[in-house]
Image (tube, rainbow, N blue to C red; front, side):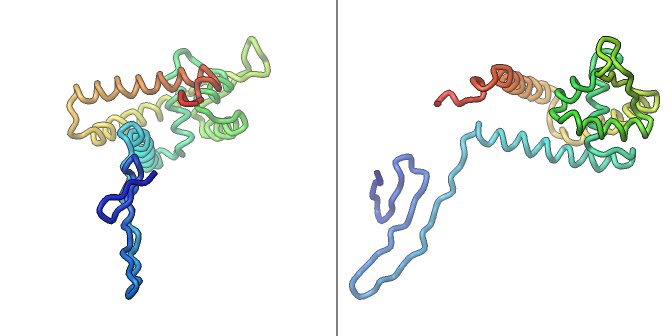
Length: 195
């Protein structure tokens, strides 16, 4: 139900305001409807901000990784392989970690293998599965990536104190854990609490 106030109409929540056009028998002037900007809640804006920061950061890293001859997907695979505990990882596990299909990952690994950064070997337990290993050249590239990343991260976080960075990391880890929990719950975890 609309509430009338001084020639304006607004929704009960007050989100949208329209100018009511004055009318008379002599003049039928029409006025353009003006809609006030709806500002999203902080939680809603946070999602967009996280997405924008991640996208922009990837763009900056892409630019600097080109000198290494790596595409975004390739450096992302190497970065994830280097963070994995152990000497190797099964390709299906890596595909799940990266949230890409096995065929897509296979093509990317083909190019990394041709470039000499990784090699694949059949899994001892399951001959159909392939273990992915990083080569010496791959580790050397990862070392250069880390130097570049360290410099870029310092520049990206300029103006933030160590305490602010730790607090931000803690908060983002909490959000990540919440999302991981939702995904683990399957369809029930992904549905809205309001449903």
